[in-house]
Length: 466
Image (cartoon, rainbow, N blue to C red; front, side, top):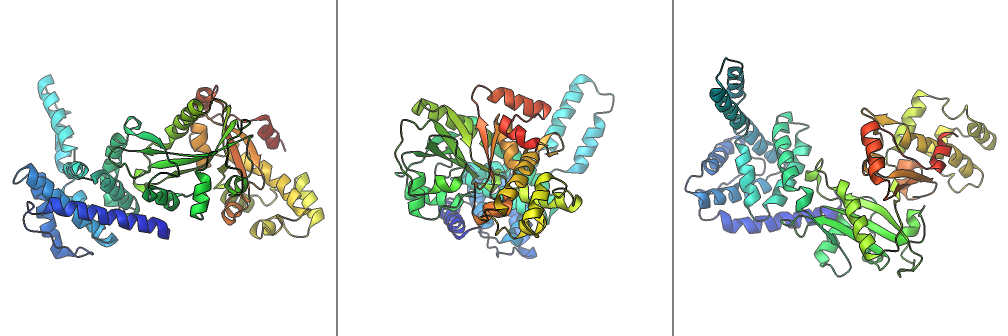
């Protein structure tokens, strides 16, 4: 977590605490006084407070006050305390598996239709954990939805050391998938006139190409640039996922050029290409909740309405898994490069091995070695994106899978597309253009999802034959 992200997170927690203090008092009864580590002797009052909340003791106002106090108490815990708190919910307010087993066994008895229907209804109720009521009460609180998103982020992290938290994480994911249905989300353009607090979040959350300064941010929001984000009505100040767009004359092959603050900021009549050069999901707690699948399509429609002259929509995307994949390939196939014509050419230029050159890429500007490495690495990158897949014919590269699922095609592999330290380490400077041909999006999507077929350009096809 960067300092900017940490500062934004701390501010959100502070706002939540201040909001809920007024709700929690004076209706919630004896106040919880928990240490950050949540010691064993503090579990009993916590248990009683949860039980009272679930039973609605004292009416709905009191239950709401208890929920606010329970949420406030959770926010003040450290990771160890949160793990114990969530463990209590999962263990003592989860599904009673003995009850479920007995009811399920009864279904196999010779029951009349009415009794069978009653038994099935009983089973459904037993499979609904009691803590779901508490999660729903949290959701009803001011800023409660954001609280639950952050709680799931904690669960995703903590369940690796405490697997018994997995059921509550899964249940919360299902609830969030419903609450964050695409029909509930608002697409908004963010420009330089947006509130400073929102602009600061763009800087803090940006995960692909770091925003280096306010000048950099101003350039990304200039006249020939766009930023769009999805918002939830109950989280109006929190961009859930956002995309940066550059309006240019032709397909871009270098992200440094797009981010160059000295470039012109005016839209020209010849600008007919929209380049999506960064997409960032901001909420870890929404991992696995489908948001990005719809973002590019919605943004494309918005841009077409605003700027009818746009005819080409493409990404300039990283290839984050390429270097890791290539290094593993070399470990299992030492002759991967040396048996090729380009490998022999490389051997004639330098006595350094291909593996050594990969670990110390000081050859990037070398007029002899650079082109030779390019002729080797570009075809390998094409094979990685197009040919190497996970089970189920899903592209091995996560970014590739995202765009291919959305109906894009692999248009071009770009050498020296990202010369930053990160670009060199993850893909040896290469980036890829995924082209969204509006007439073929549905066809490409179906080919990929149903048959694992990746649509590619002739240029990429040529690389695969190299």
